[in-house]
Image 1 (cartoon, helix red, strand yellow):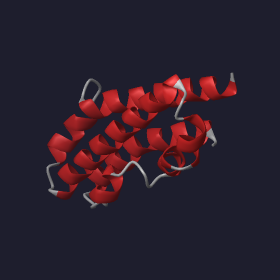
Image 2 (cartoon, rainbow, N blue to C red):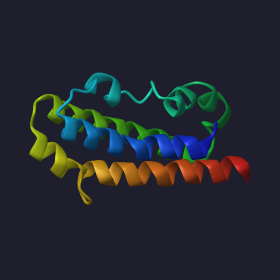
Image 3 (cartoon, rainbow, N blue to C red):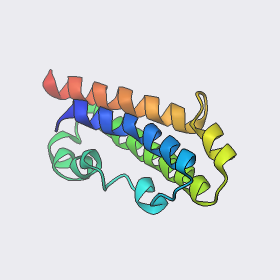
Image 4 (cartoon, one colour):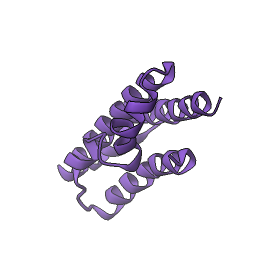
Length: 117
């Protein structure tokens, strides 16, 4: 797993969501909400589960990653409902999306360190 790319891809979601708000375009909120579709999610639910489920940081990474995608899907649904002000507020610092994003980045980094130790 390329952990740096995984972190970058999840950070990029904020740009994607803000872009959809600005363009007033729709997103696939169902897919955004799924934690088993992106490369990291496929890995966490596949090979990594077999190899690393015993590691202390593994379950935390799975949980924070799932929470991130739930929040991304929720924001995408707000955008699709044309509730742009609410979607913008949902991306602000301190909102659940921002918290989930930060926690996911930290969890990926912690899992990486544990695997590489």
